[in-house]
Image (tube, rainbow, N blue to C red; front, side, top):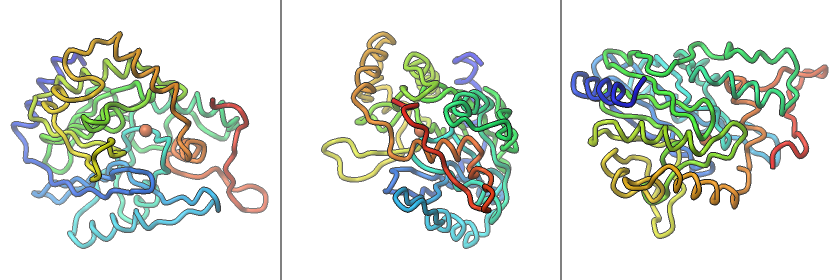
Length: 305
Ligand SMILES: [Fe+2]
């Protein structure tokens, strides 16, 4: 879809449907915001970017973060319709399959997850049993595809750059934009993972900033910019256009790509990238058990630098 068509579609959705209710659960171990979005009229819920607690030193998993979502959904008598992923995260493991067992809902991500599966399938030498066709998900969204959250209209937008598969979900008058923009004082997501591309990220961000200026933007992460001691995950198109330290109005593509590339060159890989991607490329599931019945994660040597 062209940027102007997106802006028109999103404006129409924001103006004509009910506003969703959003409750955010912030995991300060991975700095991830899980948004639980519901339609007050039908009580249909989308859980966006859930977190599985992972103890890297012990190889241990637990469900403390996801249990809070389960409690909230049950307490408010909501019906889960969607488990949405904005992308295959590199900093936390998804709890979507576990939440799906507890609460139901269709597990969805962008169609270009297939590209991520191809790249990382090779990096992990995953073997032919790992299907690289997105079949681990119930639904693969195309760019511009419409869907419903209960009675609320929604649209899925392909916003690659951080990874090849990033999606933003515009639900009513709110856009859940994953890892594209961060808070205006922090800037933008990195673009140096395998398959990432700073130029594509810039173009995706321009698409998001062509949404109506009062559109609320909910982010996937916050890392507290220097001088700020509260976590924040909500902003607007207007605030980003005016204040974003990397891509406010007036910053051109060339300058952004240079800045993003220089900054990325200084960043270490996220601590949990290897366990996270290995699980998230499988729709949040661990590799199949080995001959002893146990599941293992792999650490490829010198494949990420
Ligand atoms: Fe990410």
